[in-house]
Amino acid sequence: MTKKDSFAERCYSFLRQVPKGKVTTYKALAEALGTKAYRAVGQAMHCNPYAPIVPCHRVVCSDGRIGGFAFGVKRKIKMLKREGIKVKEGKIEDFSQIISKL
Image 1: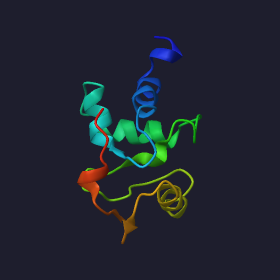
Image 2: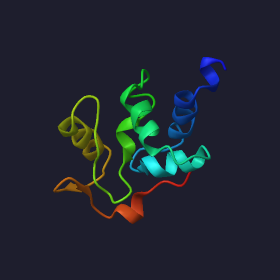
Image 3: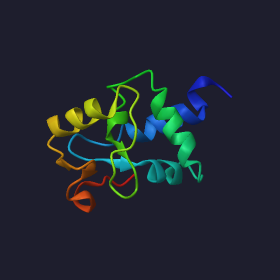
């Protein structure tokens, strides 16, 4: 398996499709990859060497909670807000309206 074909690289490939102002979930990324390895998706996001070009800050929990971020949750929220995403009490507002289909 080449680096290009690794699980993480395939995650990043799907994540590049999520535009500004939209989010996706760890679960949606895993499902797009044909797996239930949601935590592995989270680990790939944590180790993302391409940030912010590959926008791992746009990956959130399935219930709209922000989730973790290698650079800290406050920075993740700041980045999301800069893209027009509203966050209140650690959750995405209007979550169902801004979820990106993969």
